[in-house]
Image 1 (tube, rainbow, N blue to C red):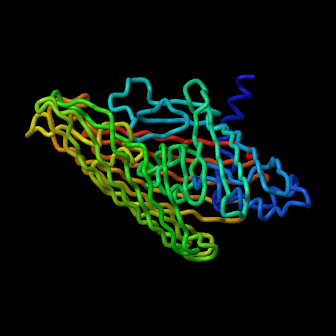
Image 2 (image 1 turned 180 degrees about the vertical axis):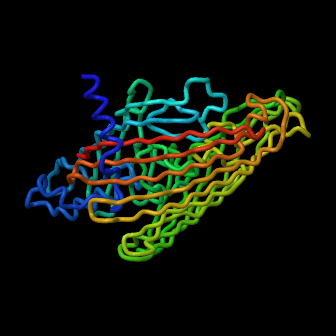
Length: 430
């Protein structure tokens, strides 16, 4: 039995590549609703309503395969999800995380004998509910709920819980400083380390003037993570983060776009020496998008730069790099300059087969300091992430993929380690 199981797993790594999330077409074909929508309901209108109410993230399906229709087509309730299983093998400075390849978490002092690691997971399995009330009405209301099992010991973890009304989005969603539709396809749930993909509590407003121009502005839960000295400590945040963007789109169906984003932050901390709270200003700018550059060839790109915005770069989120101690002034912290960028290409060989490759880089410029929970020499300096994959749609609901990831982390001291991952997945969408 064990021999048979190992043979099947090996076959999963070596056999013909498979399919993953939603690319190359972001949204499922509306014909997926044919079998569940009655003649009294226009399936194109139902699909469009679900599409507009769903997130832009690449790992989320929009159109469910199960639908409850209200009286006079004034209420649509869709239920769907994915069952996703992955198998992976790491070699190098291995990370004990089968779902997310986080370059910031590459062990910098790996124990001898741990140069290889095999992992299996079904934690990326997810469920979602997509609700649209009063479709095609100025007072249309949308609700979207989604969760997966990435929590500890397959614990249920909330991914989305938001409401939409007249351009406003309120609830739990990815930050408006994110551009999730510009993320390249990966089996890896984390994706490129430079992605600004941070879920957050949001109150956002978005408006499209036409198919080519749109904008948005929001007030979001502060994301504050900083390294304290002996003369400072953390205090509660009082001012929301303020993100905004403008976007220009072109091409068939506005499928190509570039988005210019910005964010302004106020980060509060306690100055023990002066015995009062201090405020540091953080800011960031970003360009992101996707473009069709040749038949079958699509590019994905993003570049972000700023000070005090490390929390919005997913590789740095929670690592204490928004602010670090100022050695010249005890009791003071200063914003850290950071930047991150990625570029990816995807080629569609046929409606069922496509491949992609992406390179991503993140760098910080924390100036030398003394003390702190993380000594300056052990602090994150830069990291690289490279991924290549192939996806194959076996049936309209069954996809299969294989992927290779390489990542490297370098500390301020110059110490560096890298990890490699080969993985495969099988996913059913419903």
